[in-house]
Image (cartoon, rainbow, N blue to C red; front, top):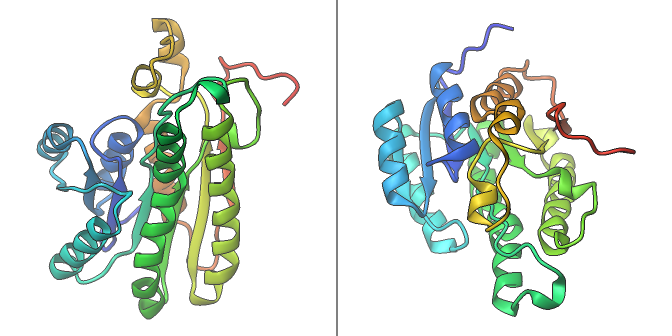
Length: 243
């Protein structure tokens, strides 16, 4: 497929590193005007300089930060074509009784609530232009079950169902909503969640950020009359049997 996103304006949450950086790299490579956002300003600045994309420090769990972002992007670009809700965090992966109330609420907020806040704000603009791609990055935890992952998994499962419902709401405006459901990735997720990290061979064989980015670029380049409801991406090195 010939991917040309040269007239597309994209916002990527959690865009300073990991999957977000790979998504930004791929969309920029295919011509999109890219804005990366997140809380780590140092990472955002570094990625912005490396890729030649715009950045803004935004806490996606705060409605007022979303309002400031949307206003800035519209003032500069005039429209928003792609929203990739990639920001997420393990917060505290542990048995439920070992998680504090604040950790539980934080996980639900960043992994699910932030997506709802962002979609609420871009949808009116996409409806006016009768086009747009909303891509929500979930996790295989939405469909599989492991001890200690209950709160994170609940948020990611909610994200998939939110995306399904939003798909039905927006298709009459030619706005597409897709859940992208990856598993093991060569990102900083495990380290940030204070979990055991992969060995070097597993990291190499896991999903690379640019690979996920190319998948998302392909989804965004589909003909206007075609959409993908959801797609699951597994690295073959990961065995989950039975699926």
